[in-house]
Length: 568
Image (tube, rainbow, N blue to C red; front, side, top):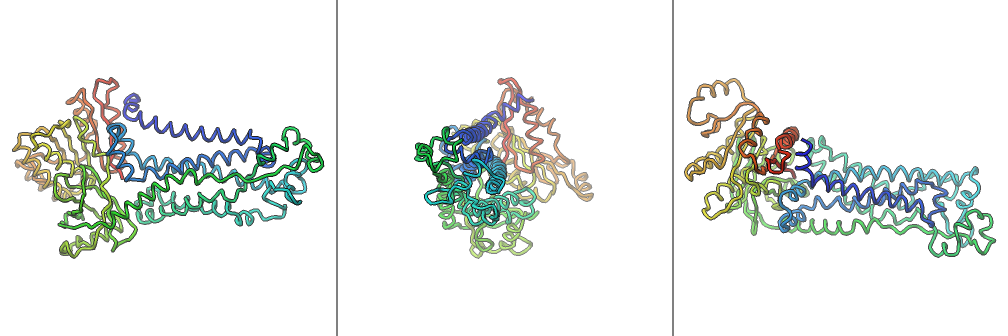
């Protein structure tokens, strides 16, 4: 089982360990440099190793702040996915894990920020204590530098009676550090799963505190509080010779008073490139926002699902891709992702939207989907569309066998896929690597089947006519029903078509036995690479990932399941 896990996740493991290795290298290299560098020897006399801890964590912070924006630059990711031949198979799956990597980098930023803040609080206390009457020797001499003309200071706390907290908040480093910390806490706490589910809008708005975060980060080091000996001073003031002769510094020609200056700020150099790249991303989004979107059809389905058909100039899509929608009359800032349910071969693109929050509720109300009379398309509120963007499902056609699993409204991305499969099957000249599709849909409410059952019925009929019934094997599971439904199902069980869906394939009642299903698929395709694609809740995702590992063969010539989760 471990071998199968390595087979499926080896590239992800290599990339994560490479990223961790770079972080570890930067931390250790910077730590050792500040522990050994001559220009900071006198600084270390006051601060000790806390200086190295603060600077090493700062470099790791800069590195990860450089990376944090890249995984959420969706136009960049779509460009890489679409133009690079290497972004197929395992490489494409890494692009699909962009959100997970974004979170991983965020956790690393939080850890290094904590180390950095703790180290600087310790530094501040050491600076303060070195001005006390108990300080003596070289420590006292260094802290008093700057009290006479032609001297530069090393200790930014000038007297023992200084209120260090108040003094800190009068500096650029102190104010920006506080702002950075508050912005980071706000962003991370509002990004928790609980907050996102309870109020996606809160998550969306607070995430824009990143603008303040990056601006404050860029100027954080401008105050140059951490100081070291200047290169010119090092040439005249030999530390090895002079450090034990601190009483003679002003009198001895060979030991002139050392001069100090702050380290040049570098955070802006790390983040400038990604920030510019992300600004380009936002400009592209704004340009797309200005483009006209024509709504051609509005359909209200059971279970609170709204279907929108739209057209937009030069809009090109692939099965499984998604778009972001904005309705300015509801919110001028919020964009929400929705999977496309139309096929590329159709002359429109469509989405199915379920009520799942304040924004979607307002949208369904605006479009008359709450039991009201549907409005004419020309009278509907304006929509803006950004996309389409690539997702895991676009790789379905790259496997000889694909297993598509949906739970609830997670079926939407598979609507486009199944339509596209049918169109491709109808083309005599089409050469498909994909030879078999297993489709599973688990749903709690029988009414939710109605809009999708029409599509399946059409596919079932047309594939029967084309003699390709073997190509698609679908299994529908209903997990919730009442007593009246149970009686109705029992009375009509012997009919040729299913009483719930109207399909020839009967609906299953209860949850799938995934061990049995995967075992059978592995038996049917003993030496195949099988892509497993899922859209739905986390609990089921963990089960399916486990099944992929469990039923993949350790033998390279055996069956291998490759797990792909739809996420955006």
